[in-house]
Image (cartoon, each protein chain N blue to C red):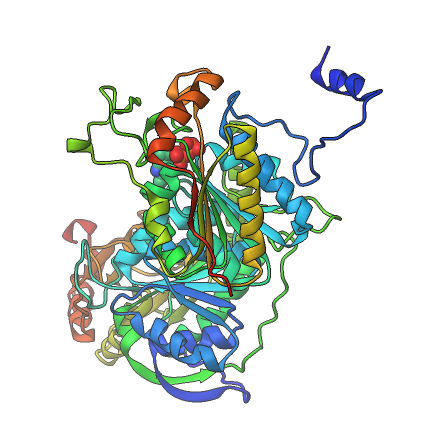
Length: 260
Length: 368
Ligand SMILES: Cc1ncc(C[n+]2csc(CCOP(=O)(O)OP(=O)(O)O)c2C)c(N)n1
């Protein structure tokens, strides 16, 4: 029996309390089982639906596992070159200042090849939302070291673990941008537990609401797993995230708007 | 070569860079993104000065990599956009240009070329012909390349550039140089708002419920799709070649020696033709205005009656390869050039012409 038939049969005789938003297409995610990208996509697009801003929103997804975001996000989208999402989003926002513009970037994209674009977009206070998926690894290219890879963490290009004495240290981009005057709202969230998902969704909602105010950049990091890249099953990867990622990348707000 | 100047045009004395910037505003450019580099910084300076008084946006980007990607975003959102730079900065833009060509976004990019390779010199050069005309970035794509040879054309080609870019959904490069950018000449500027603009239906402006999402992308992961996109692009380039070739001729009717030169070199060659004609030598000039599409056909025709060609460039010999392709061995093709930011003088070109004329029936290309 196909899953679609199963879904139909299950729906008969049940009240539907949890639906796919119109802002997501019917295309199935290509993400690996248990990957945080799927949940992050969902809460982002649910929020856009709930705020009723789908018609005024333009998304930018650069190269990385989420380069095909436009297959799933049922809104106008631009694919950006690796690292250039913030520049592309700047271009969109500068000519369409009344639209909601967001980027959806991985850590390699945002914190290595696109560091300059990220820092300068935030420093200019571009009125965009930057969603930053930090899975401490290059997912798309097969699990190489990312700038965010933890010390001693094994990846395909740090086969003996990240040796910080010659490879350098994991980069906390979110902490960096929080210091910039152009940043309006900076927060670090996760999507590995139902409670974390709820909080992350609230953060994304805040960010879109702040974008209306034209006060600066909103930056939402989502600490995520990468079961395939980390070579773990999904539940082990979530446990590993809790035990290893969160102590180094603690969750919570780094910059919140001052109360008027 | 003086064009008819219509009455509505405003006459000003301007630097080439300023004329290009002013023309962009008058052509209804919505946004400009750029980064300082000599010899084109006047463009960014002029536009930042004008922005509060006129209806367009300017942003000084953090790099040329950023500016070309801002262009991608803004063009994808349906705006009429331009960036400018000089050689090293244009090199940094190549990845972005390839994406823009593949995603079929219209924009104008001006390269005010300086001498290279490397950091090179800030003096004028034509060393970026290959990069502009043969690709520059990765993959099979073409820029439409316009080569002005006066301050007037620095302005006019911005209008032509936007028109062509939007007609073909293709990036247009204005390939100019540091001398044309810096020198002052009289320029007749068209009135503001004389170039119509409609937001294209493919632009990402926010998806109404009534249509499918608009997606700006250059990613076609299935080989068959990628091939189909390439075939589509090649067809488009063919159409451009059929319809948009532009060149100018000067005294070619009875010429035994045909000079070929683009941009600034063509001005010097025009003077050299005058000097040679005074000395009784039958010389003419073919000046390609569009470098892609290139006037192969016309050069091939000229090769019937002419006895020899001399290509003059401010580089080590780049366009001459296309001239040789067009002449296809029918007649000898010679080259003379200056590199490193040095401009050849009409007298130097004349000397080369005289040398050729003295031996006109016995020339072989080996002598080059
Ligand atoms: C200029 C350029 N360099 C390298 C690549 C190859 N590349 C594609 S995705 C990627 C890394 C993606 O990692 P990340 O941004 O962390 O996103 P993830 O895939 O983990 O979600 C790399 C190096 C590319 N496409 N373009």
